Length: 249
Image (tube, rainbow, N blue to C red; front, side, top):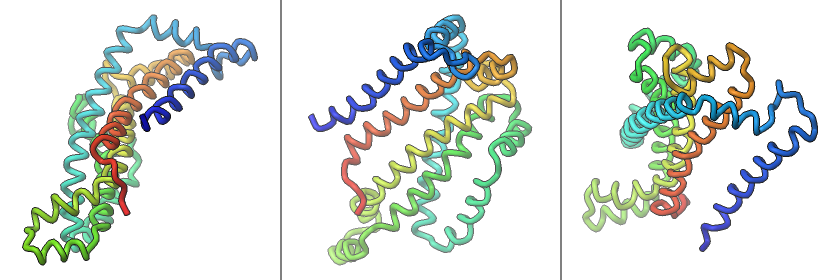
């Protein structure tokens, strides 16, 4: 029962936004170059529905694969850095510097390495999702109460038991924050990767619409990207509420 208000609010907001777009844009006479009517956007989306569905699925696969790999490796690296501080001091600044490289520049190198393949898009998505999960894992494990850790050791708990029963549960709320940030970055990476050339994907459709100045289609793709980004984010929120309901101290 407690979760219903949190679900009602975003749904109600979405309905209000859709209704305002549908009725107010033609009523106020807004220039279609800036914001076309929702009926025009829907009609344009229906006209390319097969390409839109194919592009949506392709970008989803790229995003999901990049996010999964980035999350797993980011978590593993974060654990290593948290327990071996000298490695964190040695390599974390390099990772920070790598994140300052514009994704367009990094994407160009990746496409040269792997060609215009799905692997190249997955690598770019991985590149953007890896870092927030790594940092969230490090910071989460650093919040472990050392008094509790010492108490468990005094009762003969092994390092593995301390990690699974104390350190990981303590770090999970922050790790979930990193995952939610990472999945959004992963989508951005997949779309940018498609800008370099492909035949399928929301990024491909977006760059084509931009080239031909098809404003309604650009809005179709903006909405599609928003929906695609909302789905994995919402799934992570549900997982967090169901299994990681506590909060870090």
